[in-house]
Length: 120
Image (cartoon, rainbow, N blue to C red; front, top):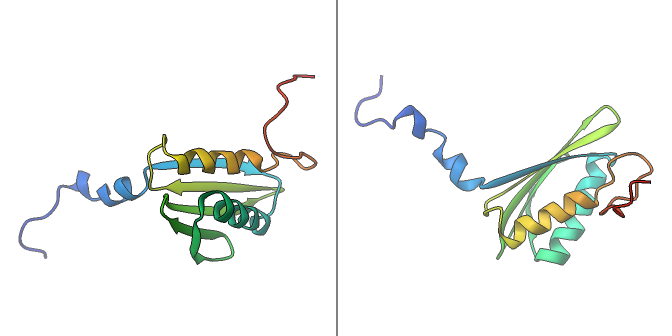
């Protein structure tokens, strides 16, 4: 039994709310290791972030722009990629993370990147 002041139950997840300001998700035809390799190159070159933690399915990067954590988990022929940042959706980091996810090929054989806009 705990005594003393206890936080209201609605405040228990406040830390997660503060540290993970924005989250993005993408399905891709790449494997988890390919996703993390693409992210490594992109985040270091574009944002100057350095990897501070990694596993076979996730990696965390830190730098002057903030922190981003990527996780990539296979689901059948696809990989589900989730990116969480500690910045507002209007930050440069979030813009670049969205660009990274957009560059991942959606279906096998796709080149990735923005489409031409041509529906044919």
